[in-house]
Length: 571
Image 1 (cartoon, helix red, strand yellow):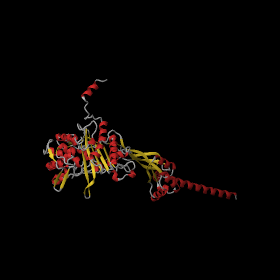
Image 2: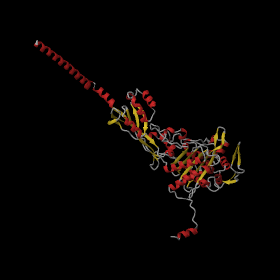
Image 3: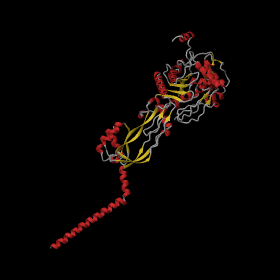
Image 4: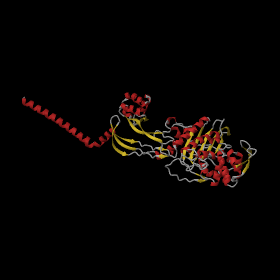
């Protein structure tokens, strides 16, 4: 009996040992399978759960003014993202997450459920720092933060029409941001990071591709003058209850744009409130019939063609003139006038006579060389070419109306650019907006140097006591310029109560340093002449620019001899 019990015990022991042996063998085989045969697969699965490839945002290039003043910068911000597959099992956390994101709970639930099969969605882009901190503090599995860049415009509305703006993906949508998007855009990088179960990055594993920031873009603008022009234009538009306006200030010696502003404006930092009708740069994209600001070119064309000389007189009485079925009118009967009076008092009759006496091809060449009917080459989106019909298609009445600025169209920028010819012995300079870009454009000879100097001297009388722009006068400086008040066209022809009021001027007239064009769109019908509406904007902006750039006065009053002697005798 005892022997039998020992036999049974020994058999059980062998069974147990056999079971353990089989189990150990199975474990060993499984270990071999996991560590050897399926190692690559399992490693990949583990990495997919813990290691992620992240895109590294690149910093968009900064835009500066001519002195390096930042006009557009990109600041790092946090964006919340989520893995919907992880969030589907944590519905009880959704209300807290919605509160931290400052969104409606129903909106968040709908967004997660509609994308439940995805592994990545944005929850909120470019959050404020306190919002990002609240999201991180929740420590919800499958919710994380990533760094992006948001575009900021320190000077807001003052530079909005030049700079434009970017969308939430940092892509240029208008203005310089759009025109030079490729130059400004950075190249995103990529890296592999290890994350914890809450989706937070623990450490970098490897850099796949480094991010490369965009390039800096330096503009020709002077931010001081830009703000000054913006302020003065906005004041004038409000004061005259106008529909809008534009102003362009150029360096007369280089053609560089120092200020370019429009009204109404918009705030590029409030992307959601931007309206397309306010975002376009009217000074570059919109055109108008210039009216009387064209008359100096009519006089210049006639002088260059030898039709008249500086001493020629014209009979403009009785203040009207018939050209076919058109009646050309002056404000009053100026009688017999010279060319200086034609420009100073803005005689339509005198300008019509000159235009009709000038050979059409010579008149057209002057206007074409002035830049009318062709792009200026600023590369700005939507830059207008304006309209100037070929002289072979002109009828008599069309040539007549061209003499006083109707029958063609141009932008405020073209208007300002054309007047650089009077500052540079008849040579129109190519305008520039970007300092860091190569400029291969050539200047154009609009008129002879002699003619340019003669017409410039005539335009000084526009600011005199008998001229139409006495409010453009700047203390201590000689100023030359021309006013314009042109009727706006409508469905039934030209309107009787809607105008473009404009002024283009140069200062100091003895050696022009600045050229400025100001256009006010539909000022109140009570006061709408260019000399009263647009000329004061020129005076205030250019007067400040002359002092800011330390330009020497050229019209200081002479000190009486006796007073000078008394002054010299004092200590």
